[in-house]
Length: 180
Ligand code: FNR
Image (tube, rainbow, N blue to C red; front, side, top):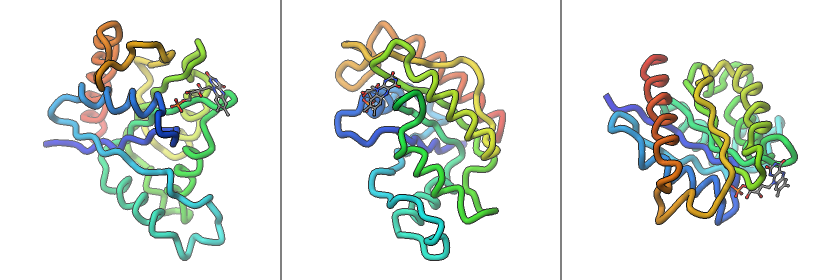
């Protein structure tokens, strides 16, 4: 049966390379995976005082993650870590204590940056967080991408990276199936 993958992009800017990449990547999903892009740009800043009275955007986020079978994080790197907007979303859906909606969801971590290290340090930090959240995260292959002209062409992964991305997607699909 078809599995829903919540795609969480760790950048909220309009022309985000990570968003462009994520939208192209999901076109290579096999038929057993369905992508659902998760909105995080309208979430308030996480404040523990609001745990008992969450904003509707927080309730929406929690519901979407809860309903998903897996999560794919496509993150930018800010100052050698994940952007605050992504951490904010992760924190929201991890609370109230004992009611995290992340637990047990199989996860993948990929990312695109303009620097040559291609989000590797952000991804490493994110893996640390996901381990704590009890999300079984695909270890290999890793995908650290540097944004270059042609990585995404007309909304699809460009010819130089298509095969590489397909290998990742296939491994991720197998991972999701295995964890189910
Ligand atoms: C960056 N950028 C960046 N790149 C990188 O490879 N390593 C880093 O540590 C950082 N740090 C960083 C901090 C801040 C505050 C900004 C705004 C940017 C550059 C980053 O890769 C670039 O802005 C990408 O375009 C961000 O991804 P999106 O928004 O295009 O998806």
